[in-house]
Image (cartoon, rainbow, N blue to C red):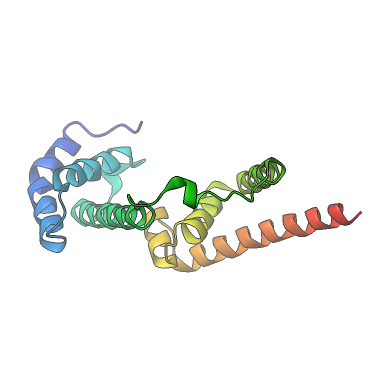
Length: 175
């Protein structure tokens, strides 16, 4: 864990915690977890490699709080979309999926996860954020601390890697 200057985080908290909370409440009035978002915002700051080197800590805190709030809303929307309390699990289940197909699909997912693990960390994160979480390149750039162009490049390179692995796999299957 990074070392903080004595009192640095405490001082920032005293100076900006109320403002960050007010910002979240003002921008998202229906948000119920404002105190959790403020707390997580400062936790993120404490995990930053060199927090004392941040040129504008106040802006960093506000942007982090905004990102956390947007992420929470996305998660809620996703859960709401897929959590239908009226759904009967027996009707939702795909009875056509045989054990053979299940294990084949599981093997393919494990293989795909292995291909993702071969990627450099930032490239893998950019790809996952883009393809699985549906983030824009601007959101990815902001979350990973890279440029939008870099996000686009990382996703493209990750896709090329996965595509090459799929082509190689298909060539093997044909033989």
